[in-house]
Image 1 (cartoon, rainbow, N blue to C red):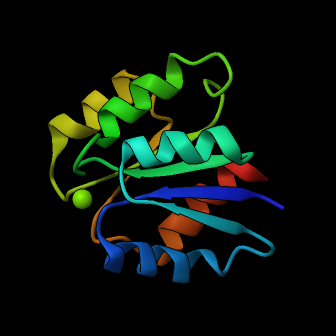
Image 2: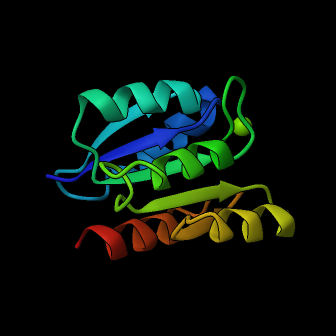
Amino acid sequence: MPTILVVEDSATMRQLIGFALKRIPEARMIESTDGVDALKKLSTEKIDIILADINMPVMDGLKLVSLVRGNPVYKNIPVIIITTEGAEEDKKKALAIGANAYLPKPIQTQDLIKLVNSFIS
Ligand SMILES: [Mg+2]
């Protein structure tokens, strides 16, 4: 049963992503509202993949990726970054610091499912 950590400050986006992830059989979604909250969840749950927004209060997605990659316990967890449409710099930065892939907003359900499946199956 894959556990997916969704890190996103917008409740609407979390809901939308959660709805899409229901198409992955047996997937369990854990929600976080920012990077610090995500680190807390990582310390208490076994996470198989992280889906993270970039722009968030408290700790943004890029900082989260660099901390995850710098931590020996978490460094191999796949990370998909959710980017704002056309934010080329953000995409490049995210991949450079160790994100595995990026998903542009507005999120297309099919793309999200395909990408997540490519890391968990
Ligand atoms: Mg945001």
